[in-house]
Amino acid sequence: MKQITRRRLLWSLPFATAAVAGGGFFSMLSGLRKGNFDPREINIPVINKPIPSFSVASQPPSTGFNQQELQQQTKPILINFFASWCIPCLREMGVLQQLSSHIGIWGIAYKDKPDAVSGFLQRNGNPYQRIGQDPEGNISIDWGLSGVPESFLVMPGGIIKWHYPKPLTVTSTQTLLSLLQ
Image 1: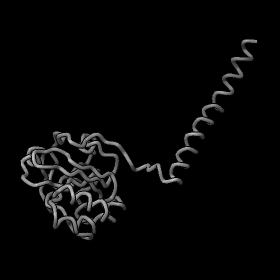
Image 2 (image 1 turned 30 degrees about the vertical axis):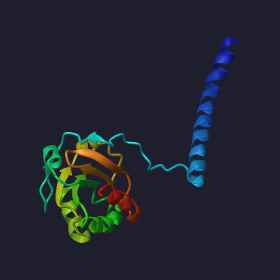
Image 3 (image 1 turned 90 degrees about the vertical axis):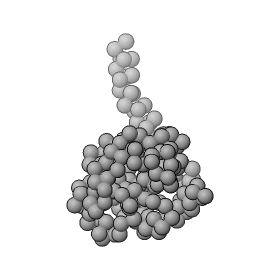
Image 4 (image 1 turned 90 degrees about the horizontal axis):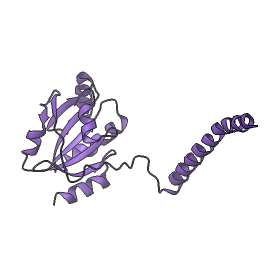
């Protein structure tokens, strides 16, 4: 009798797991349809915290940078993580070009090849004052990156004031520019 109960329990376990996973998936899809669930909305607790310790090698045609150089800036700097293989990064380039007349933008090429990044910047314009490489993605982990493109507003002294985990848009840059006033 015990073997039959145990056997039934083992047989029902995959069905129960599938039912729970299906319920979660249905809940996520319902949230997407109603507009109250954004899978790109990620809570990364970096706001009002100091930038992590890092140093990025130079990415031609610019020079790399490190934590100390970023902290010593007297004006806010926008740090933008991007990659040449990233389609949203390509869409974002026009917004970055416009934004570069209002704020200094330093880029970090995420898990990319230097030649590919150079070609990407030649084809699409270069909004960056300085560019570094993060070929293994280790620096991006310290910043709490969830993907590319992502941008961080770093205030003088090295405190992160704003984080945007999506491609920048005209609307998001208005929020960013309001923080600079």
